[in-house]
Length: 192
Image (cartoon, rainbow, N blue to C red; front, side, top):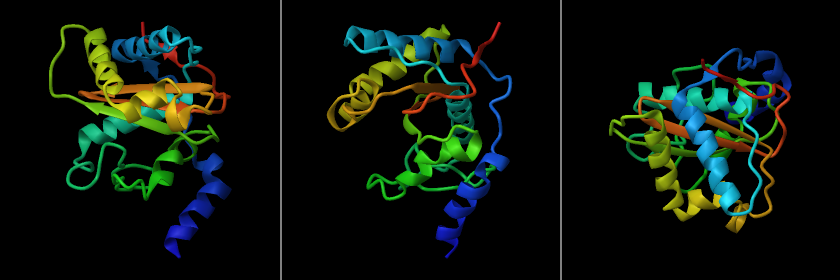
């Protein structure tokens, strides 16, 4: 019953409980990541994806959650969410049994009403510039057929038309979120 009740409550009251992205601005790593992904898409003759304030908020929130907890250890992967925040916790496993837990995060955390689709990366390496981490994450995703397909809309993602993208980075955890709907919250600010 509880599993059924949580989605119903989120559907009814989610917009009232959702946080706004606020004035979170993009870090140098996040700016580089968004630019590099769009450059890569253009190399493939695909349009760039507009950065979304809401999805950037979700991405940074998830990167911080991954950094501050060990939720993805064991059978759970980097798409998992801890019980240490104002969201539904879940262990995301390779069988994608709880994929809705990820898809719902934009609605849980912001007023963005579309599904979110995430790619994630982690490294313990240190880099001399913010762009180097972004390049390393993109290189890893390009080398992973499942992640690459999401970025360049191929395979099972060929029919998707990404209208919004969020980028987040925190302590070596890098996440990118894709959405089919335009974000009414607009674009994120750039840190000065």
